[in-house]
Amino acid sequence: MNRVAAFSLLFALASPFLPSAQATDDVVIPQEKRVAARKLALRDLDGKKRQLSDLKGKVVIVNFWATWCGPCRQEMPAFTKVYAEYRDRGVEMVGAANEERSAKDNVTAFVTSLGIQFPIWLEASADHMDAFGPELPATVVVDSQGRLAARIKGVTDEVQLRALIERLLPEAGVGSPTSPPARR
Image (cartoon, rainbow, N blue to C red; front, side, top):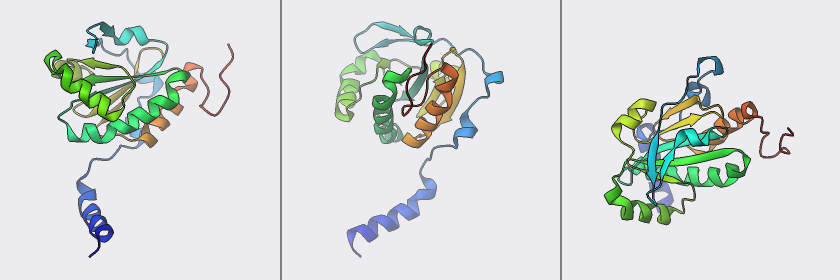
């Protein structure tokens, strides 16, 4: 059996056990049911205190992750790619690392190895994650009004991230990346 056939067989056998992104409709909270996002205040890699509330007015994607989490590593390239495409369109991403400040060097090496450009905040605890309802990895999306708009438990991907962003940007008064910016 050649390598391609062996890999294909292995993937086919493992696929039912691999985490997959949930359907976008399954994770979005309808506008009329959204509530204000819980407080999230952590320190960035430079030690500066950052708060989720300071990002109000943008669609904010918060990914809860850790360097020791294999599925977190698996999904991180999707966040990096999508962030590059949307950061100038009213979207912010935050990597809320479930890592102590003492692990800063390890986190920095992780960020560098994957070419992560979005802000990384440290010391996201189980309490922080419980406030948003996720586990590792998990992602929450906050709309431009500061309300919890979506929860993704487990691994996500580029397709799901783009679909969520495209769904929420019009609510924020911003067009899609292929359309001209909305005039105000």
